[in-house]
Length: 185
Image 1 (spheres, rainbow, N blue to C red):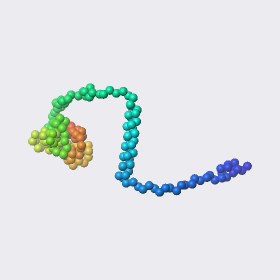
Image 2 (spheres, rainbow, N blue to C red):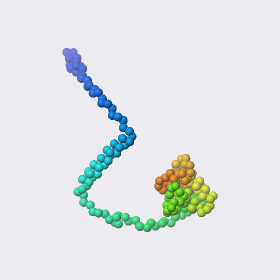
Image 3 (tube, one colour):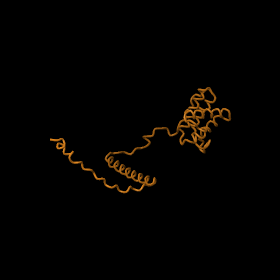
Image 4 (cartoon, one colour):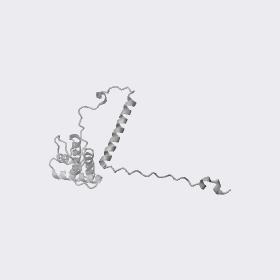
């Protein structure tokens, strides 16, 4: 018996699948059309999830919560005394500016806003109390601290105004105070 007769698959070629002619490709959607499509799909999915959540949690008994039972902070904030001052003048000025930003508020786009909040440079200017040399030294150390962390920054005001919240600018004033102290300024 030959090998060919042992393998019937070898005698008959395997059937080939016929390729179905591809339908005309869909017209390309514009970005706006794709965004609208995705927005519609996501809205439908969120609506389905909201209904599923309501159905799945309807059996759970709940009691109304009185916020007075939950909120336990004092209604009027208590100001903390500033920490012990750095011994060097520039570091002490930056530390006072940091404390002023924490207690008086931070703003962007102006030295002082209508509520009395200050930008980084506005806090330094207020705490320098007219000593322009001390103010310039503090601003230079602050700019150096900013550049160490964030690279090439044009100025303290541009860095301040580039932020939408106070977290980073206030932290940088504090770090600049430590840098000035380490330099003995």
